[in-house]
Image 1 (cartoon, rainbow, N blue to C red):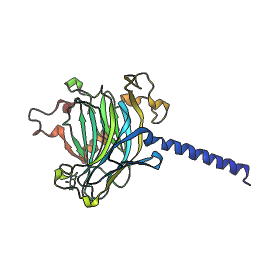
Image 2 (cartoon, rainbow, N blue to C red):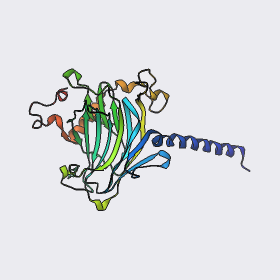
Image 3 (cartoon, rainbow, N blue to C red):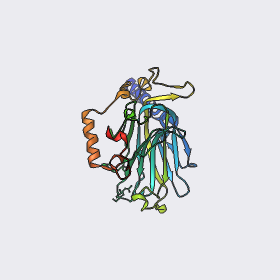
Length: 296
Ligand SMILES: *[C@@H]1O[C@H](CO)[C@@H](O)[C@H](O)[C@H]1NC(C)=O
């Protein structure tokens, strides 16, 4: 017979595993809906993992159940390995309608061994044309990495593994509409974009490599203001931030978060060493002058 202490150890182990199973299984089943792809998108491992796939007949995608009005949202993504040329894995926040707001991460695939490009954009009231593109300082296909969007009333900060790569400031003072009144949902998809994605469309998708697949885990919206369409308000209005009931912690500090000096330095490092394109420097594209937010 088991001794009392080994029995209590066993019970402890069982309780801990039940807690960890329920903590991790909550995730993707509860938080996202698969929206297209006819079975090509799958939620696996009790909701821990989501995979998207793309073949010659279709890609696939999912969206968050929640809509948000401001938030700090993390997702871990592992991109299509090998020859991913022509494929695009998109991960973005977007509101509906013709004058929509949108915050984009798009990962443009490449031939084996050639670098992905991380393409970013910000749309406010239906107007985009604010692309910045980056190489990454690691191979994004070997493991999961965390891609984060901080969106508060003053700024939008795109981060990769906690390193800020782009900041879009509220530029209402110079006449640029800011993303502040349209709730957005998270969307993600894997699709064929070989007309433009890789070396501007020169390299086409090699369908002999299909199906292509990207993976997602650890979706975390614990520090985000969830919009309730029925109540017509967000969870942040009445100070019931989701973060206070668990998850991200840190209360509502992110609502006023800005880059501190060490993060400013890291942002500069990324922009100096890894930036491929910045619309703010593209004077030939904007003959009437670069967009006003670029001067902030
Ligand atoms: C793919 O690799 C080529 C050659 O290194 C590079 O010029 C290009 O920027 C890379 N990325 C994409 C998405 O085309």
